[in-house]
Image (cartoon, rainbow, N blue to C red; front, side):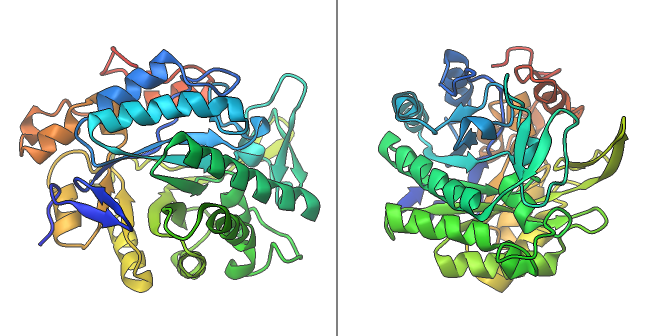
Length: 372
């Protein structure tokens, strides 16, 4: 029977335990996508006891940033700072993976640019006009992901994660709610996965067969017309066939359409609400593991209590991610591994961390006033 403290192997990588720091957008970088002292300090405090750190959504293009201070790998000049971050994480004892992303029409608007890439022109922000991508633009974004992945490799990351969840660009292509295309990039679940599959194929070609590739996807999107589990299984099977090594399973917990002025926008959240129990997403991750056979990461209020232990020991979950709780108490992983849950400083689930970056401000926590 596996426990949180057991090691785990991903290809040639030996992960020391089953706890993952998931990609947490901090907005601590510069507007040019560079690492800052705040970024380094945040990860240094949280890489001591986890087995794996997935560095926050890192933009493959400057027009694909989630927040003004998103990290970037769109230029060679960003490699050195990322290499320093890898060194910091490894000195803490964890392996380092970086999440590559393009925010699509959820991007932060640039000074002279208010347009965002989109599969079908569905808006998410009142200040960003979604532009339906041409096939040529899609082909170029595939290459941009490939270039960013090579830079991640050169920076020394142990693997890369493709962000295909949370209604960013790849997720917008995957979801039937936001992808209404009638070309090879639309249609059923397999067709909507074409962009994701082309990106994975490109990364495999450029990084080789042994370099770990993670993929984050929504198991479900809990809003009318959103992706269902059956779609996710089709997508996950296709990703596995193309060479993805680990599935990082998330979801859209709630959302819908919102009227802002004369615009109708989609809003959606990946945070489980206060009334949902710890581990509410574990069964979805376990189903994907059982059906597809790849290692999975589960996420969702797993930072205290017995839910994390049961996920690994009873549900055959390979790794569990602890996000908001690690923002609140950077020592959470150590306390869980030592069986000292009673000493964990609990997250209040106030979502102040989400709210601050949503305003374009550096991430803040009401409980942990010492961030970053």
